[in-house]
Length: 342
Image (cartoon, rainbow, N blue to C red):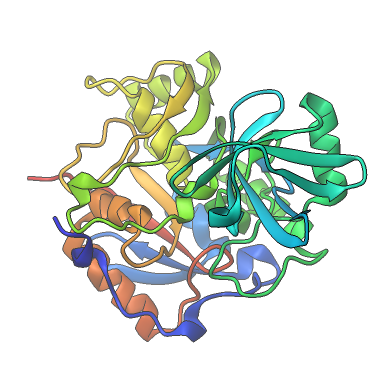
């Protein structure tokens, strides 16, 4: 398929700049054999006590930094951790940076350009490990997506973090989880819906545009993830008992499908994944997908088309646009039922 097959017209005013409050007051579109409109707090009525929700427990770090190379202002967005002090980054203006350059972020915090590879700039920071994380919390800010035009403010420190966030390492939020509140989780508990965590440290590459004409030529970014033996066992027990696996977000889905076997069982996993899911893919683990509305021509829109069906998702997105749903990270939610390829 061509990248152009996944394009659609989205009015700019449909892009959410801020989340709704409370989080579970956002709208919800269920995409199954029909389209049904709800709000997020209706989710417990759409799930069964035998279902298992799998959530991503990654925590977003303040991954955007402002520095200077001499007189030139530089904006750094961390992308992927490469070592104790080293990160792959997207740095602007990247073309003017060269190996050996020093970017000064604060009097006691700087980074050296180690290498460049296309859009990526590899940096070695003056601090490492826990000291580097402390410096990021002092000098960094939340890395809001590029389609949100405003700068991050104090409210984003909480708004751009899910209730599941526990393990630091993401440089973009697993935004499907942003809709959950303690009250909604309590209602799901009362319904009997269980939860299990996985980790996928979301990278800034999730926002990179697909620049090739044929999607088969696209090189997917890699991200680090982990599935514990306990979560793998919970998934396998649920599937064996006839329950459904509900992935909260495309990030949880990607790590689950990475570690899924062809017989439908899940194994523990720790490492990088660059899985790229497009129409024709046969899903091994996930039965329902809870997710936001995604960018035109993005790998995530390709993924949801693979999951729920290309024609069905085109229809669903047009329905959402026509009815003023809010799109992208701070936008509304959808619950997708899997449609297997014939």
